Image 1 (tube, rainbow, N blue to C red):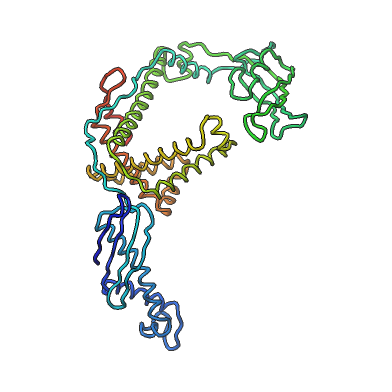
Image 2 (cartoon, rainbow, N blue to C red):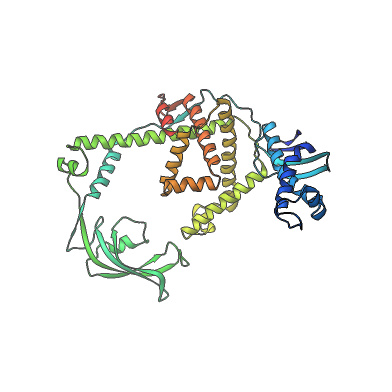
Length: 441
C-alpha cells in the first residue's frame, strides 16, 4: 500500500491510498468464502462452491464489491496511522481507480486533529483565592449541625420566624382549582423562603387552626408568573429547640469529647474543602493560560455538532425543571444570540483544551495504567449508582473505554502542567498544589 496526504486546511486532510491487487487477495478470498456459504449450486455442498463457479453464478463484480467494502476501512486506518493523523469524524471515501487484477485507488477526506505548536508550559504563573475560614463560617457549620439534632415541640402560640408549621395549601385561579395546586400536611419552616411568594408573611402570626387566603404567583406550570389565590391552613405550630454547644452535644454529634475539639475539626474540614476549591481554581486558571498562549483551530463540523448537542442538553434539563428556554433567557436577562454565543465559546474552548492536552500527553509520554483505569471505572460506577460489573460491561459493549482512557490521560497532562506552575494566592503567598494534583489524578 502507498499513501499520500494533502492538508486541505489545518483541520482537514485528504488521503490518497493506492493498494496493489495482491494486497487485496485476503479480502477477496474471504468474500468468496462468505458468498459460497450463502448460495446453493447443484453438485456442490454449501460453502464449497469454487471461485470460478461463483463468478459465473453471482458475478465477479459482486465478489469484488464485497472485498473492497472490507478492505477500504482497513487500509484507511493503516494510512491514518502511517501519517500520524487523528480523525475527528467519519471520512468521505471515494474509489477513484479500480483495475481488476491490477490496482485499487481511493481517497478519504476527513476532519483531523490539528498540529499544534505548544507554548512553553513550564512555570506558568497564575493566581488563586486565599484559603481562609472565618469564625462566622465555623458558626454556620455548627448551627447546621445543631439543627440536625434539634427537637420540635408543639407550642400554643402564633407562628414566628424560625418556627416549623404543618400546613395545607390550595391554589385557585379565577375561582377554579389549579391542577396540582393542592398539598396537605406539608412541613415548612417560616422564613425559609423559596416556596411561594408571600407565604412567610401570611404564616407569621397564624396559630394552629387558623386559615387565610393570600395572593401569590406560581413558580412553574402553565400559570407560571400569574396571580393566584392561595388558601393556607395551619394544622400545628412547632418550635425548634437547638441543643446547647457543650460537651454533651460534642459527644452526641461526633467522636469528640469536647466542644473545642469539635469546633477545631469543623474548621479543619472547612479549610480542607477550601483547599480543594483552590486546587480546582488553579487547574482552571492554568488551562485558561494554556488556551491564551496558543491559537487552536477547531473543525467547523465538530464545533457545530457539539454546540447543537450542548444546547439540546440544556433545553432537556430546563424541561425537566418545568422551564422553557425562553423563560430561562428572560430570567437571565439574556438574548438567544448571547446564549448561543456563550455555548459556542464553551464548546470551542473545551475542544481546544482537549487538543492541547493531547499534545502535552504525547510530549510527556503519558499513559494510563490498568489500576488507574479500574479506579476510574469504579468511581464512575459509584457516581452513577450502578453495579460496577454491569457498568464495566456497558462501557465495553458501547466502546466507551477509549473515551475514558483519553479523559484520564488529559487529566494527567493537566496535572503535570499544574504541578510545574507558579501558583500564588491573592495575598502573594506561594501555593503548593503537589498533593492536591496527585490526589486528583
